[in-house]
Image (cartoon, rainbow, N blue to C red; front, side, top):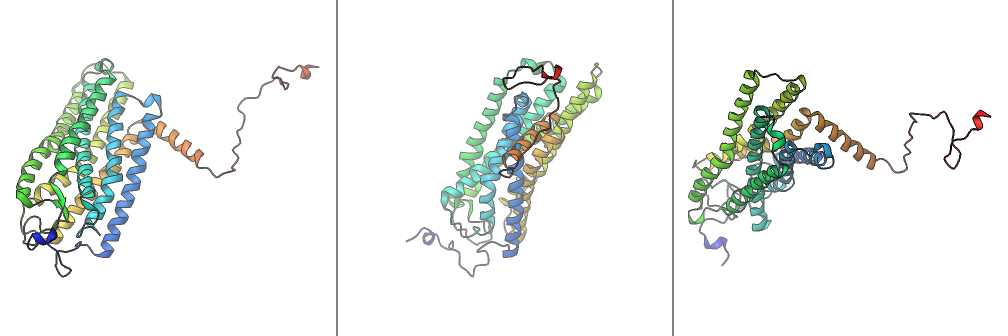
Length: 358
């Protein structure tokens, strides 16, 4: 007897109103186009950020270590989690045919990168406040300390947002009894053995620590930075004032994109595991909308990096010019106009010739 047959009422049928994605074929195609556009945008932008920081020595600063790691997190989310989410919400809604490993991989990657991104942005805000409040400490803080800080964020994210979080999920048919799980995709929380209750407790605690607390830190630190810049009576050079303004602009843009992406998703997950008898379409499209906001935030971050940093724009421009040079049409001849012509000619050996004086 198969696994589905051992659980009464779980096997979906073609006539079951909840079987398959609630979206029409046209809507599924539209969702695919949106996710592909976001995926290309996010991949290109975050990959450009990674190359701009890693290939240029002047970009390897303590501040940019946070941005580099944040770009890696967004890149992984866009490359791995985003395509699996699209399949889960469309053609793989019910049944899920990619196997348990792919199901757990989606949740592992999606939530670990979410926790990682949240803690990175909170850490970045704290670091910005340190630079504004105690700029002299910028030199005394070692690069190794920043790297340890960032690595610790990844370790916590992989453990609690990856391994532990994904353990609650499995691709199994859901009973259609009007419960909180009735209209979820097949690859969702394992409701057996009191799985929903256990998940509620874990997600409430973990999301409070790794998502809501970073949001709170971000808001508080942003207020402190604004207060510090407004009330500071110490003499500051014009150059320092410009740098501080740019730092505030960068933090504001990154913080805004973070709120746009993670507040809707956190709210949706908190709601959907607690409300029974939900309307099928309402739950579905709220989940889709929240995820679109999440992907949009990943696309906004690379823009924030470049808009607020002249060095980042310079490095990104150099990377793009190199890419254009590498992908130029084969056989294209690029001529260079000499910028300086020597008044003395040289013979084949390279020695100056006095023939012009004869």
